[in-house]
Amino acid sequence: MASSCRSSSSSSGGIEKIPSTSIRVLRSVESVRRWRKPHLIDRRTVGLVPTMGALHEGHISLIRAAARENHHVVVSVYVNPAQFGIAEDLASYPVTWEADTAALARLDRELADDGDNLGRISAVFAPSTADMYPAGFPGQEINSKGSFVTITPVGDVLEGASRPTFFRGVATVCMKLFNIVQPEKVYFGQKDVQQTVVIRTMVRDFMLPTEVVVGPTMRAPDGLALSSRNVYLGERRRAVATVLNRALKAAEAAFVSGARDRETVLGAATQLASDVLNEQMALAPGKRVKFEIDYISLSDPNTMEELSLIDPARGGILSGAIRMRPVEAPQEGEDLGHSGGPAVRLIDNIILEPVAA
Ligand SMILES: Nc1ncnc2c1ncn2[C@@H]1O[C@H](COP(=O)(O)OP(=O)(O)OP(=O)(O)O)[C@@H](O)[C@H]1O
Ligand SMILES: CC(C)(CO)[C@@H](O)C(=O)[O-]
Ligand code: BAL
Image 1 (tube, rainbow, N blue to C red):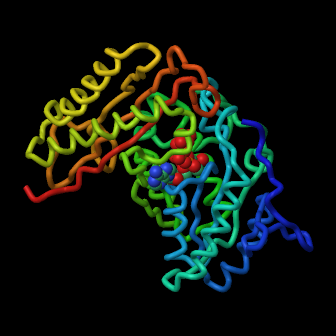
Image 2: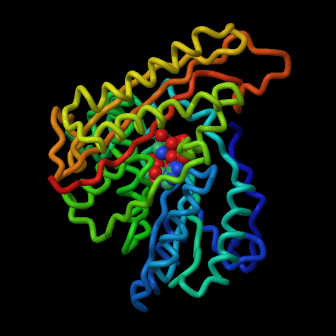
Image 3: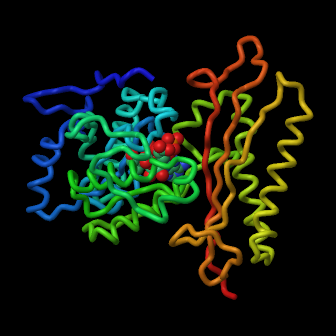
């Protein structure tokens, strides 16, 4: 999408704020450092919620959690080019600055009225790529040179196998954000489960002085995980996009009813997905939705390594990715979704909580 519209902020005495709020809009590394310094001395804690904007209830739930536990909440809004592969959707990624700042203003008023919070939203950090990558636009190729953080082997599998530069980009930008904001706590969503494992590993292995907090996945009433990329779907694909969640739930049900082996647990998921695909293929091209399962995985909760058997005392992670193919035979006036209908890749997961043997 076109570059962000940044008019939704007011500036007085060189200090930019979201209108009618006390939320500072910080656009440079230097301005965050200046804002942060006094809070290091007065020992007021900072919680950071990293986002790529296009805010929805998933992001809002993380900000609420951060406000409960910190004196100051900083929300970063930055579409990080380094985590997009060269053939991915950097150019069309939704940028909704006006709606995002309005949502933050509304949420901040709500937080102010709720006595259970330690803090409120103090700042939005919305940097430029020139500021975040002083050496120049980051390479998006696998063999690009540059200052990158790589977390392997966990970053190589699943999402990392489908998107080989993704976790390098995520770990690199998060390392930068953590160094700039110096948060006591950082907040990530369960929806991107492998990302949480990569970040926890990075924090542990680089001795970063921050605590990683993971918030639950927020969902639409029909079970679809909220995601900024859902706007790409359009009505026809949106109706079928729940297939991934339903497949993971079928696998979860197999586990709950006693199955422990990979074949039975994942077999339940692939059976459901294949039934839904068969139903769709029986429809006319102007009505149906084609999709491909990229992967459905049963993995270890700490390493994301594939499991052949679930140890009930450790549990596991069911995760998956699905590619919704472009809409076939679009109908007159049909809603094809934001950006007109290319393939859309969605992810989801369910945690299999440890149970007594
Ligand atoms: N449905 C959700 N519930 C809880 N947290 C979420 C949800 N969706 C995203 N998040 C979290 O919000 C943070 C920022 O994510 P991001 O801005 O990429 O949004 P997104 O919806 O995941 O976008 P995308 O569609 O690109 O994956 C991440 O920690 C992510 O896990
Ligand atoms: C953590 C993150 C903000 C890094 O760009 C991104 O990967 C996301 O939004 O999940
Ligand atoms: N929430 C993950 C960001 C991405 O897919 O690029």
